[in-house]
Structures are given as C-alpha cells and as structure tokens.
Image 1: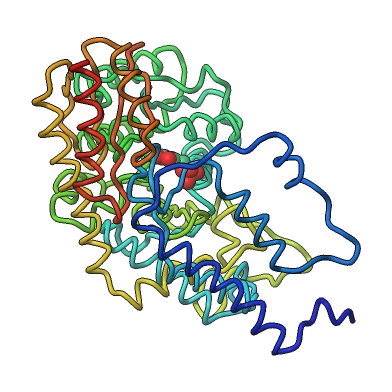
Image 2 (image 1 turned 90 degrees about the vertical axis):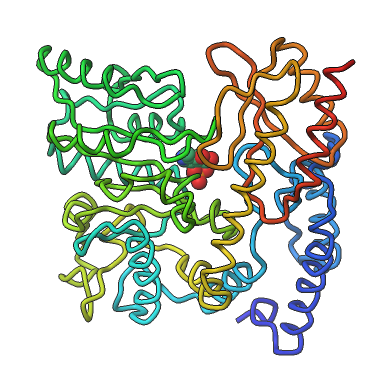
Length: 459
Ligand SMILES: Cc1ncc(COP(=O)(O)O)c(C=O)c1O
C-alpha cells in the first residue's frame, strides 16, 4: 500500500486545513466579489492541462493553480451574478459533499447503506410533499435538470408507449429548455416526433393550438403521448398554464411532464405556490436543488406521481445483484433511474435543510421575488425599454425599442463587472434579462445595473 494514498492523521489534518483556509477566503469575499473575472491566455490554459507528475507535487502549488484557473469566467457566488440561472452555493452543502465523499458509502442499492438510502429517500418524500404528488409518488436525485428531464421522458415513453414508440408525439414550446428536446432525441425520438407548439402573447404554451395539434396528429395516425410544460422558463421565467394543461392531458390520456428545474422551489413561498397552481397535477416533475436551494452544482431531482412507472422503465437485473430491488422497505435508488454507482447526493440536500431548517430557504426565495418585482417596476418606467412581460417568478426579461441600444446597454453592464447579465433572443429580437436567484443579490446590485442601462440609453 502506498503511504501517499493513505495519509496519516497529521497529514490529513494538514491537507484539510489548507483546503478549509482556501475556501474561507473565498467565502469571506463572496458578498463583495465582482460578478465575473479576467480572461486566461492560451499559454495558461495549456499549463493547466499538463499531465500529473510521477511523484506528485505540493498541495500549495496545486491550490495556486486552482486560483489561477478560477480567475476566469462568471463568479456564481457573487450577488452580482444574474445571468443564465444563478446558484450562489451553500457552505454547509459543501461540507455535506465533503462528508459524503469522505464516507464513500454506496447508495445505488439500499442494502449497502440503508440508513443513507433512508436519508435520501426522505429528501425525495419531502420534495413530493411540497408538491402534493400523492402517496404513490417516488423519485430520485440526479446530476441536474437535464438528467431529470431525460429520466422523466424515458419514464413517460415507457408508461405511455411501451416498446414501440415510432408513432409517439410529444409537445413543447420554443421556450421549453433545450434539454427537453435533447432528452427526447436521446430517448430515441426522431425530430419530427417533437412538436413545437406556439405560445400566446405572454409566452405561455397556447392551449388551443396544442389541442388543435393533438387532434390533427391523431387524425394522421400519430400517438400524442406527452406534453412538456415549463414551471418557469429559462428565458423569461414564464409559467405555462399548468392547470389547463393538466386538464387537457388528463382528458387526452397523455402524460404531463413539468420542467420546474428553475421555478419549482418557489412552491415553498406563498406567491410561488399561487403562480405554480396546477403543478400538483404533474405526472412527472424536474427540479434542481442546485438552483432554487443553492446546493452546489450536481444535484437535480425527478419526481414521478406513480412509482411503478419509474421502476418499470429503470429496473435492471444482474447476476451479481440481489433479486429484490428494495431492502427493509427502502427502494434501491438504482431501480429508479439510469445510474448504478452514484454519489450520496442526498446528504448535500439533507444536511443543510436539517441544520438551517426550511425557513431561510423560503426567505431567500421570497427575497428573489421581491428583487424581481423591484427590477421590473424600475425598468418599466425607463424610456426606450419595453418591459412587456410582468415576471411570473424571478426572471425579469425586457426588450429595448432598439435592439442595438439593448446590446450596448448589456455590454456596458457586463464591462463594469459588478453585475453579469446574459441575454436571449425572442422572435428575432434582443431580450435582456435579470435572472435573480442568488441570496447575495441586493437591491444595490439591481439598481447599479439599471443605472448603467439607463445611462447608456440617455447617451
Ligand atoms: C428550466 C430548466 N430546465 C432544465 C435545465 C437544465 O438543468 P441542468 O443545467 O441542471 O442540467 C435548466 C438549466 O438552466 C433550466 O433552467
């Protein structure tokens, strides 16, 4: 056994304290850090890709490389980060990940770590209870929303179409996250089986057009089986008409998958719950704890109303495994999704929730809604800005009377580096957006960016 791979306690303590000290500096700076960093030159990128040495090197010099590597790009912990979908991260979840990796127990099958499986299944049960999915619901933690959408679509495909899915058709909108169409392709659907349904003037799935399209597809001998709705689109935070869609899919004997990767955890707030009305009728639901709960990247979730649908589509058997797919009443997580070996993701959600309680998470989500309201109110008074979409949740998307003026305003905000924004394109028009989901974002961050935008418009 190499002693290098088995450091003694003193060495472990020393290595750990270096890493903890490194992170302490990062966390001390988090509230005031700029929103994005410097560019790295090609030579530095090449250096960072160099292979390991035969004899290794000091942790000090490795952490120095990490500092250099980390200077570039967008700083997610910064409160000024309001581009894409933010995630500030959570120190206590990082500690949980350290613990989970350090304990290195196996959570693919319940028999290997029944207590840990219970913790993780308990997290899923709590999620299901937030959405009132009923006593037969189940789910699992995955690496993110993309994997949740993939697992949800495979589940719907198996439940509704069985083995022959050549005539199946599924429906989404131009604003459904691209991971849904990608998942459908990965699940074996041809591009002509993925139908894009028009949206209304508020960018919500147009239920009448959807209904018409289902009728005409059935008339053509196709099998409409799945509607993918958004509970908060990435572009504009728009929530599709979930209740109406649930009504339609139920009367058409179709499956309703709701992508709530961005917006789902607003269900913890009173306002969010009102906006997401109907979400409780989903057949399956994608969530991203690494968005709405600030868990470090790598934790998504899929919830399914009927556990048997999930098991039917993901159960696997091997001679080297036990015959049952549960132990002590605990379902093997590997029989619910694509992974066999998997990290103990449940700990990084469970530990912070147990430690802090639910209230601070709810408060953080409520503050994001407040800030979005503030941003919208200010933006809608500025000449040259067309704030046509009242935010459903915490993404505030707006257009400019002149797209070029919008691009200049965006560039001015990002050049300042206090706030980082990312735009999107809707109907060939430039759309800028404040995506507010970082508990470190303040009214000062929002106002600073809007001041810059206003100034560039005045000229
Ligand atoms: C609505 C929505 N769905 C799915 C995804 C994909 O999630 P992930 O990046 O966790 O795979 C995102 C990511 O931003 C999203 O906003």
